[in-house]
Length: 311
Ligand code: GLU
Image: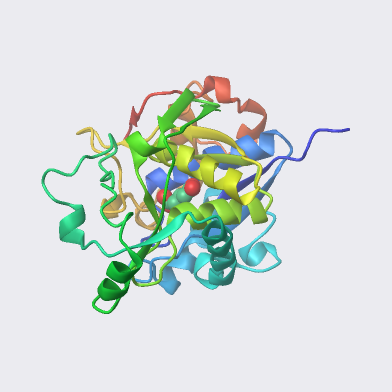
């Protein structure tokens, strides 16, 4: 039997215009798939209605195309446009599977309770849930539900979940100790990223996930959910993050580093791709180059492992 075709994805959250950090992970995800003769899917992770605005979705396609990246499924490439905000039925069906295994419970904790000063935190800053609502009786749940709409959490076991990342090497977490019961649906009914990403990657046939190393710590949770839902885990490669010269991560708040702003200031896509490719160790000098000229030069082995400061 032949090797399975690689299928990667762009999964931006349209909560702002694409910035340099998004361009970096998009370029590397695209090169990883294309250099293996693979396909790319575009999915807009617009679950959070407070942060994601419809007009920003159009900007994503424009920015990706400007960089010289293309894709085979989703958006204007054909088929349907994959907006997570339209896929609630699929996430609900997955929740029902997990509910059937008696793994879900309502959580009535307020933000203030969750972020109490003595709450334990993960190394990435997220709070590890203390399990406050896990053992509520049916009567207590009923009484609380009259006052407040609950979030839905999943009960995690004392279990080590590990995997070998293509760039970061072996990584494991004890779900109960390092992560805690996590939210699958917020109290306002919005499905959580951890659930949506697992359902979507599986249903879209994604078998290669290349994304920023800030999501390394989400991966054990996602692999565990994949197991419960009967999905095959994709291959993961967590790329280093781009940092500003002061060491802070480039974020959407750095408005001058959006692709739209760089383009407006006269930067060409070739110049930008050249600088990113140089930072990725794919070319010797930061000279202008087209994204597709990098396809034969790409190898995971050439990429740096540690975060990078450029610009
Ligand atoms: N939508 C996420 C982001 O833009 C990426 C999620 C993922 O790659 O799994 O940060």
